[in-house]
Amino acid sequence: MDRNTDSAMNDLRNEAAQMGANAIKMIDVDVVPQGTTALGEALICTFE
Image (tube, rainbow, N blue to C red; front, side, top):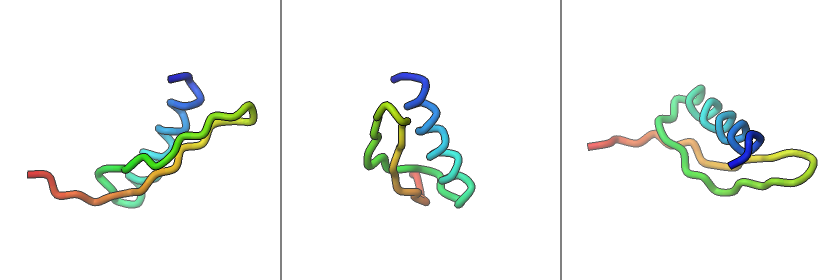
């Protein structure tokens, strides 16, 4: 992964954590010359 993709994924993880999520489900990562976006769902999971 390139730096922009890593940054977009980190932004997604940070936003999910601020919402109280402890996991994310990646839906899409879009890389275009104008920038990179990551789309995902913030999840609150119980791990056993």
